Length: 534
Picture 1 (cartoon, rainbow, N blue to C red):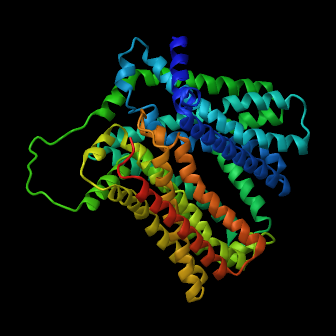
Picture 2 (picture 1 turned 60 degrees about the vertical axis):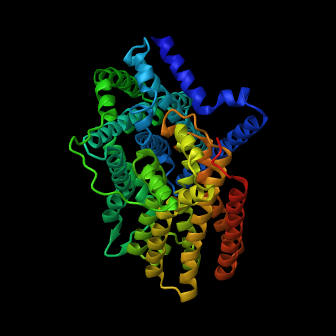
Picture 3 (picture 1 turned 90 degrees about the vertical axis):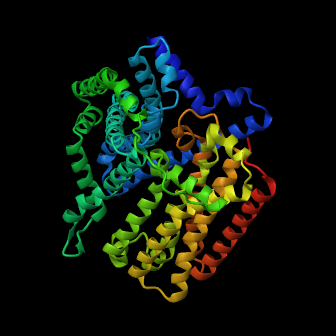
């Protein structure tokens, strides 16, 4: 059983990483894959640097003793967050389910292989977060030698419990939505609601304890860190076991932490195997009305029909919906907080770090960065999958296909951009010119993100996926498509902060340059592609 399980894990990881394409692909494919791998390594390095910077920030605030607990909690939360939205399509409802279940392999082996695959990726996340933070902690605290093996082993174990919890939550969402008429859309809506709750909960937890009669207490940031630390530790008691292990060197607590984490995993696999077939059967089962009648048919032009198809594919695919709307939700929450707290209070919170003018000038770009993450086009070509021959055979222009996919992206980003910019202008009350430019900047970034994502996906399309998760969350194409625009936005913010150029001149120049690049990319797609590539 173990050999079969590990063979399934090896095949799954080989497919997800694209090892065979790197080894045996043609020259162009091999170069493309290697370039993407280098980009992924670069992104991992950035996140590792961010984790180290976060740990240094804790030291700077005089809260170095919180680093181990925060490293553990951040790893747990990130693992929980990402796994929860990958469950559908990875552990449940995946395309090769029937094929795997027909093989002479135990159900527990199939579940274990899928779970171990999730565990491997989540352990990578744990290393990215915990390794740099552990290094910073060891530099300033200089712990006993026992700290290092305990910390290293913990990085391999920390993701067990949050992965299983995320799978349970994902299974519950799938079970609830499967009973509804539009099950896939309902699953996406439930995931969005859960995402909004996760993002807004910290504000409500700390707001009442740190803000009194509109005035901030001293050492605000340190107070926030302590309160969040205490609340999360109380909510997730395993944190106490971990803290006692690596900070107090309690071998008993450490062994209990290891046994609890691994034991929870084996118990989870055994229990899930009892109902695994029933859960997947429910997800694959659809109910149709027996008295369906056609009363009328609507006719629309080609672009409208393609747009409707693309839009339906977006909102009926939970992983697609949540992965591409998360940035917009985060941006909207930030804009609401910006209005509720007010610019003056935010400046007071960041006293010594930024002033009102900097906050006022940078926030439109913050909106643009958030909306840049909402890139549906980074996978819209690949998602055609085995159905791509339909678009190839239909008498439609490639321009209509391109426009329909871009329009879906803009349907998400433009409304959110207008709402967030309006909230920003209500809070700040700038002059007319600055208000207009605050609307233009997010719109231009949204256009660039949509066009670049499609341009890039046309060159790196993959129709051989087994689950939608593979091309939406686990491909380097989607990673580049979703992160390039935010990275450009952050670079623009850094340039502005460093040179302090006039807001209007800098904003108009940035908008004009991005518009030019967007136009070139769009026109190159129109000129190069007569049909969707196979």
